[in-house]
Length: 444
Image (cartoon, rainbow, N blue to C red; front, top):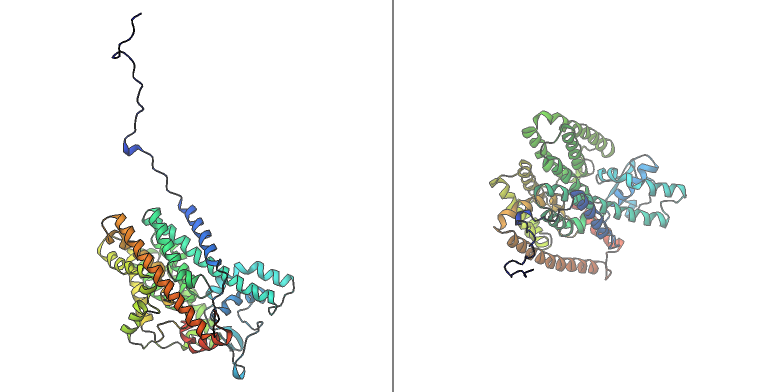
């Protein structure tokens, strides 16, 4: 049999190569999975410093859930309070027949379910509030509760941003909000009203940025708006635009949105009048809105010790994003958010103590950080024509932000150490003295 010639020999078949468009891309992780991982990771980061920031403002909020669960009331009579000359109580509580928290109580009401087991453990073991075990538990619960609220706001923010952009951008902006701003340094560290204010604002954005929110969703948005204002009265600058947004874009459901806030306002005013003999409650004495507006705004934005752009320079993109939402096609709610941020700056810029008292960094901007995160997102397409260049620009700014924050943090704690005679945190006496001097702004 004749041998095959080379031209007759069979060649091995080449495997078919799919066209580039048919090459499978790795699937994006599910939004719920990313949110859970973000929540768990941030919660660990927030609590792992094992330190408690020294401030009297949050003490009533850390104690009130125990009073609600064990005593069934809103007073703090059962706790021991330090007294000053003439038996004067600390500035953060006030006797109106009973001892009440001067700060708002919305945060305490929201976190009360987290206190069920700790309150039961104290009661079942007969541990008094003056016992060292109870006092340690008070601090631990405050740290955990504040961290949970802050981590929840970040996790939900990642879900909302996922609707608007890719999962990588959503995750990056979420981590910027959670770790590159005062969400970490302030809101997650103690039970000031900032953490709940952030969470409420993110929930509002989640509802209003949905394609077609239902009547029930808008009713929930109304409830969240009521909680947000009850917790932090200054947040009316976002609640009012929310009402106008519903009126213009979802007019059929405006009654559903406004019903619960109306009921909540009646209950809040009744509580304030019966408890403090003033409709504004503990905030009734805060009437110092007579500062030069431009001075206050400049201080809030660029002052070395409180300026937003000094501590968080990447928020410069937020100002550009707030302009962009009016120039390009954007969700209607994002435009209303930019109005809320502008009002927020004006309100706090006109406050005589715009520097926010004895604190670290731009505390007053903490409440509006979710809105600014959306503004940063809005600036990204306009920041550069190429995503890679935009990413490099953001990374460069974040590096400068980290350096500036580290320098300011060291200067702050060095000044605290000087104030307290060399210790890393102020002593109780120096804390009370500093707090009494800035009691009004610390509650604002």
